[in-house]
Image 1: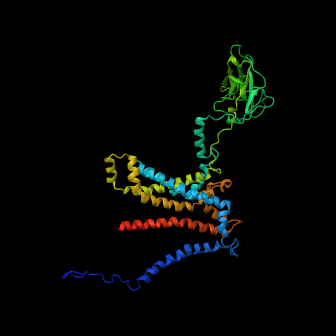
Image 2: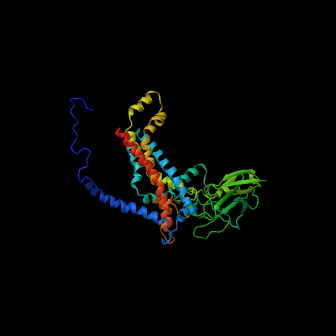
Image 3: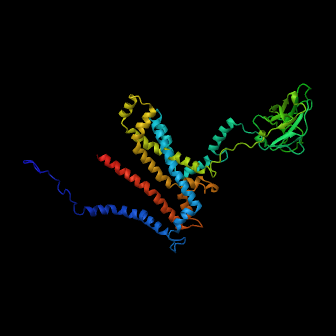
Length: 449
């Protein structure tokens, strides 16, 4: 009821009514989009659902047989397990790194340049990123960056062997002692230079600084045991076995031990020209070349082996998408009310408390957007797995999108199983999509308030 003298509110003309033809006009504008949506989305989904109930040839109704195959075929079950790992690990790690990068780059002068570098992988296609990381994870340390770094760190703390394939010939005065070591066939004595010739080392792989071998001179009784350890191989031929020839190189750094009654009484290493000297205590001992001289060099980690191939590929995905997460989170961070952060600091909160109790809760909507977007993205990951995983490990790195491709194409294609995998992927994506839509609607309602 209105008060006397109060004029009634003026309503715009046509308020609450739809103008004639407005619905038709809206429909005409929406028609091209609806046609494309039906042709590119609705029809393929409907056909895939229908095809999933038919057999391999598509002639006979198979019922739920194709869906039963999804849970009985070992390769498909591996793909499902790997997809679960992807959904849990990849979005979480990428979002966490994006959050850390966004927060830290706010405090440095060169933060913009850092963000540009981190975001740059987003400009690279999945195909190119797969090729890059296939080379990064190459087993050979001379080609693969990951193993080059790993081997370098390993060799810093555990010295690599210089002669992994060195061995004596039957005519040499050495014999196997078990465990990869070699010993002299008879005890050595002072005044009698010892010869320790080996073969099996390419001249190009000799230690840096190795010099032409030199025959050790005979020593006096108090000078100890002398000898020469050298590569008994002359490039181009012409050398004599058991003789130090002018073109042969000394085995620089070869460890030599004098053993008496099973106990090491002295040890030394060969000089650049292969010569060595042991103290008088070595007189009458047997010389041993320990197995540490001949162990195979450390080749690093088999990144693309059955056990590490999935974490390795997830690493390449995080490299690409951490920049995406960082940019979105940085945009949300820029809109935070700074007075809240400053008030917390004034009240005595340290930076970790400010980050954990204020920054992260205020960024929760942005973090949810990033996390959900990446979860939807990883459910469809295909390119990286297909390109990075070698044929021998592709079954271990299998994911649903790759299995969809393998089941639907090729000489042994089964479109019924392939369609069932496509429907399964759709069902896995739908809850995440529904969660995202629900969150967007809630945000819109809060904005209107």
